[in-house]
Image (cartoon, rainbow, N blue to C red; front, side, top):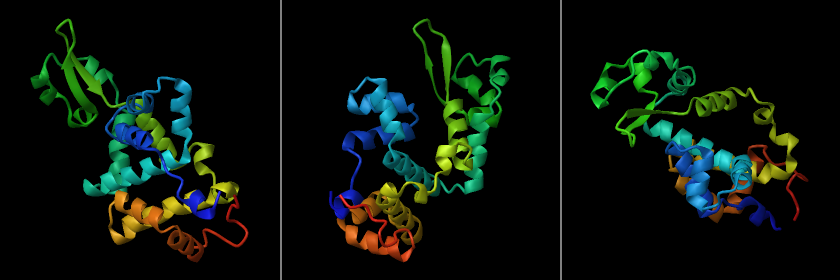
Length: 210
């Protein structure tokens, strides 16, 4: 495999659709199944562990937060609200219809992603996943060892790491969209490599040879 091919290895359209599904609020498993048609748990787990998918999600979340005008602190506060919601606040006086949602405290309303009537005519409130919020906080704070892995620990992934850092740099520093930054990086691999070397991300002998 050439250096350019190593650098421009991309997610498939289906995997990108799965990532966008996650950003829309679906669980990784459901998002992957809806996007690919693959119902096996093994495929979904492999997708979740794909470092490019993880980095794409991280960059897109950064873009979404930027568009919404959220600071990092505000983002942490919002995710923490979901992660530590005490469901007893709702169970003590469950809403009977859409109008009752206005009576809930604001921090509880922020944890609701939707509502529906079930087949028995009962009003059902759908909450954002607490587990997903806790996982996001854990990753953000580096709680999990795998999330603290340094680039130097995985030299074979240096080019991929450089690619996504370049994308992040373009998005934050230049202000282009994530999609535009990705397109630019894939069309100009030599420029990305040059940038990575200038940043000290790639050193002589560290570029994987295929």
